[in-house]
Amino acid sequence: GDSVTQMEGPVTLSEEAFLTINCTYTATGYPSLFWYVQYPGEGLQLLLKATKADDKGSNKGFEATYRKETTSFHLEKGSVQVSDSAVYFCALTNTGGFKTIFGAGTRLFVKA
Amino acid sequence: SAVISQKPSRDICQRGTSLTIQCQVDSQVTMMFWYRQQPGQSLTLIATANQGSEATYESGFVIDKFPISRPNLTFSTLTVSNMSPEDSSIYLCSVSPGTASYNEQFFGPGTRLTVL
Image (tube, rainbow over all chains, first blue to last red):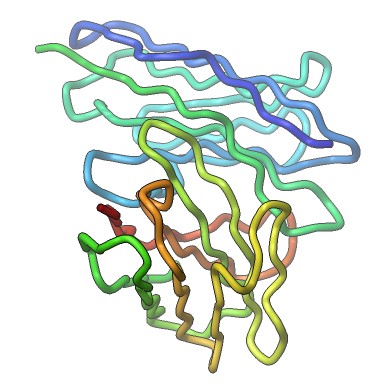
């Protein structure tokens, strides 16, 4: 079945450091890929998405490119801020269905 | 986008009791989902609730334990029945504007449940 694997956390960075959170997936067909973020005490919210191969999703300085050849959707940000501290979830929704599969989540701590 | 509220935001319950969680959406939506998020874990889908039909439960979840109602396109409830400490978790509802794979989900703030 479909699955999402993302790097384990926690990830601890200093402010203005470069961030990469790796995400790979297994799916048949042509899934859409998502990154959701969960700030402390809140529900999940969509950070960015990509719906087909080579698409780049971007939002709030974060980017991720849908790489079908490597089945990856790594999240990157050039300069993190303390306010980026949160849990990040990679997810996919496959064609022909509406069930979303979430990765385990990666907790990010950014120190001032 | 959709704005979703949940009640209660948190509760502490005794073993053997039941709790009903409400989810209200500010617009009409077809697809509504209930998830469980155990401490430090990812989201596990409990069931999909569509208005006018029975909820569809995922493997490991049954209607007797987690009955769901979906009386209209803006509201749903999830009941956690005969609770045990293992049910301590965050329960999240979410909605999607459609059934296409490119539709993102919008999440409520969650209900944090502690069972003693």
